[in-house]
Length: 94
Image 1 (cartoon, rainbow, N blue to C red):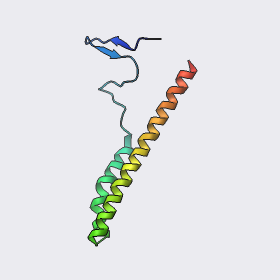
Image 2 (image 1 turned 90 degrees about the horizontal axis):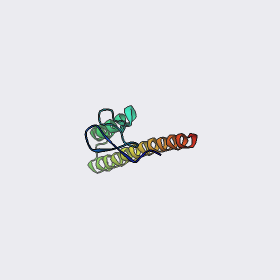
Image 3 (image 1 turned 120 degrees about the horizontal axis):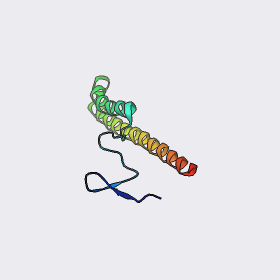
Image 4 (image 1 turned 30 degrees about the vertical axis):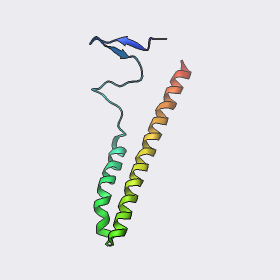
């Protein structure tokens, strides 16, 4: 079993597993994450075009904010679960 930390060329302890290098991060959700973010930004701007009553507008803006946040969280949770499953399969294969 390798040690948890190994000496890096820069003189500090660098983790040997579990972290991505800064120049090549893999933490984003890609295009789907981008579109969810854009949806969350643009829907509140479009709602007043379709709903004229101010009280209903604010209700739909709040609901869209909650909806896009929940969608983003579901997407991220799915991403993390897939990564964990892949790691479990790699560990089982060893």
